[in-house]
Structure formats: structure tokens, C-alpha cells
Amino acid sequence: MTAPHLVHWPPNLPHQLTLPDTSLFYNAEVSARRYPHKPFLLYYGEALSFKRFHDEATRLAGFLQTVCGVRAGDRVLLYLQNSPQWVLGYYAILRANAVVVPVNPMNLGEELAHCVSDSGATVAVVAQDLLPNALPLHRPAGGEPPALQHLLVATYSDYLGQPEGLRLPDFVTAPRQPLQGAGLHGWADALAANHTPGPHNAGPDDLCVMPYTSGTTGHPKGCMHTHRSAMCTAIGGMHWFARTQDAVMLSVLPLFHVTGMTGDGGRAHAAPPRDQLAGDCHHGGGLPGQPAHWRI
Image (cartoon, rainbow, N blue to C red):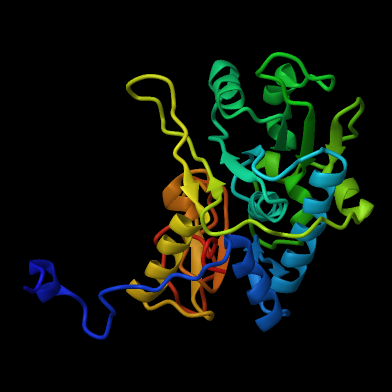
């Protein structure tokens, strides 16, 4: 018997999908080999190629493992606004065989502490403008949770070019500030350390990402997604929306949210939510607010 909804199914689309038995990070590795010089992300006009993206994510993964002690299955917080560093941090965590815990950048105090404590994270990738919110939880020597022993601090302006005719937010253009103290690490220093990560052995059934609910009816709860479940959304969306490697998407939805994490392939223009940038989607694509993220 034919399922009723298949009567309305788009023509030429399969009714079932065979999913790859690989991790989400492997998508980035394949794209870097296939399209090394193609822009993956554009941030106020500044391009980040697939090759550079893969290289930097790999070196950051090495730093997370070697300096921050990240091990397979560890939860690592991701606490930034939409930016190249957000996506790089995401894939660096995956390359380290760890689990991404994306956090709402509007979370403060108790909200942030809950995500740290509930997830068990001891390492966080944090934006410079949000660092004051994370410092009260920073305890280099460890201790009872919530306790973040290592903070990898990103500065948005490190990935800015020379955008013309745009009035950028102050937190985006702010220069890099010096860091002092144990367990505080600058993004540029982490890249310069050039650490090589261990083997990438995360599989399709390993935990991949754990976004938190808004907590409308109580404390926010972590939603556990494996690499396979994330891949299902990635592959399914590519087919459903007929996206190719040449699609161009404007990313304005918050990346910490599941609707921001699901992308549509090709090239993404990343912008902080509610920013004035309308995007330079001159090659076509669309404006669903979703980046080329899971589907790279």
C-alpha cells in the first residue's frame, strides 16, 4: 500500500536515503580535497576557502587535544556570535572526536552556568566580547562543576578584510586584546602552535552535537544528536532543496540553534543575527537564514 503523503512527493526524489557511515567532519575533509580554493565562508566580503577552513580546524583540534586535554566524547562549549570562528570551532571540536555544545550567546550568569554544569564541559571556545560572561566559571585548577579549565578566545576582527560601505558592529571590529592567566588561550596563538591532532575515529553512532532547549518549561535540556542523525538532515536537505556545491546562502539565523546549524551546501555568507548586512548573493541561492554548514 502506498503511503498517502507520497502522492504529493516531489518528482525525481528518492523515497529513502542511504546515509554515509562517516562522521560529519569527513564532509569538510572531502570538500577541502574537491574544492580547495573555492570560498566556503564569506564574512563581510572576506573569503575563507575550503582548504584553509580544513587546515585551521585541524590545527585547532590539535590544540584542543594537546593543550586543553580534550578527549573523545568530551563536551566542549561553543559560545560565540555567528562568525567564521563559530564554524571553525565547531569542526575543530568534531575533529578532536569531541562533542559540540553550542550555547546561546545571549545566555548570561545562571543560564551559562547550567549549560556548563549539565554538559560536564571543562573546555570552551569563547568570543572575546563574551569572555566576561565566561570568566566567573573559569577555574584553571578544576573543581566542582561548573568549572571551565580552558577558554580558547576568538576575536571576530581577525577574519575581517576591508569591507567598504558597511557600518560594522563595534564587537565585530574590536581589536584583539591580550590574555593573561593560566587556561586562557588566544585563537591566533592556538593556530600558530601548529599542533597535529590524533587520528579522527568518531563514527556515525558517536555523539556529535548537543544543543540546549530554551528551557521554557524548566531548565534547558541537552538534545543529543549523533553524527548519523546530523548527516541525515544534511543529506536529506541537499536532495530536498536541490542544492549544489555552487549554491550561495546568507546565514543570519543564530548558528547555535538547530535551524541555523542545518545548511544547504555550497557557499555561506555569515553575519551576526539582526546585523545590517544583506549579503552579496550574486550567484543565486536563497535566504532561508541557513548556512552551508553540516553539508559542506
